[in-house]
Structure formats: structure tokens, C-alpha cells
Amino acid sequence: MINQSSSSDRITVDTTGNWRIYSSRIPVGSRALGVVHRGGGDSGALVQIESTGLYAQVNAGCIRNLPQGEVAAAIYDSINQR
Image 1: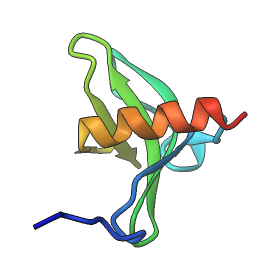
Image 2: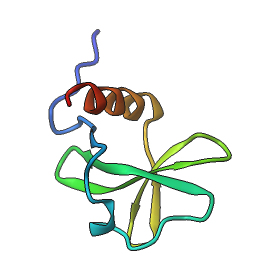
Image 3: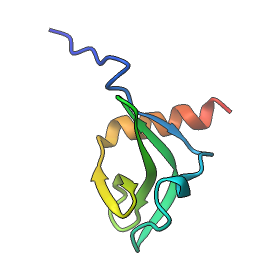
Image 4: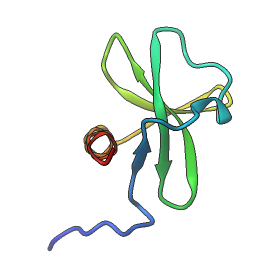
């Protein structure tokens, strides 16, 4: 069986997006990369934890893990669409 993701499950990234709309601060030791959009209308600041390289979503001080491969692919797509 092939696992097909729907557009409601899709992760997209806007590397030029204003991440400060979602959080005025990011965790110490991370860097802001833009805005991440998760299926179903969930969006937030996209950060990368510098010590581990892991991507996470930040909303008003709350940090959420993200599927790393999907985020990396979405970053690549965002950069190459410019």
C-alpha cells in the first residue's frame, strides 16, 4: 500500500516569512529560518536548534517537533521557487 499524504497533511515553508508574527522570541541556541505551515491551517515560526540541527515550530513560546525530512524538503522547495 502506498501512503499518500493529502494537502491537509502537507508541510510548506516560507523562508522569507515573518516568523515574529508567531513568536516574539525563539529558544536560546536556535536560529529562525522563516515560517512553517502545517496542514489544517497550523503555522508558526520555523527554527533550527543549532546544537542538533533539528527543526521545530515555535508559537508564543511553545515549541513543537516537526517531521525532519518533510521540513528539509519544504525548505529546499521554498529556496528553489525564488
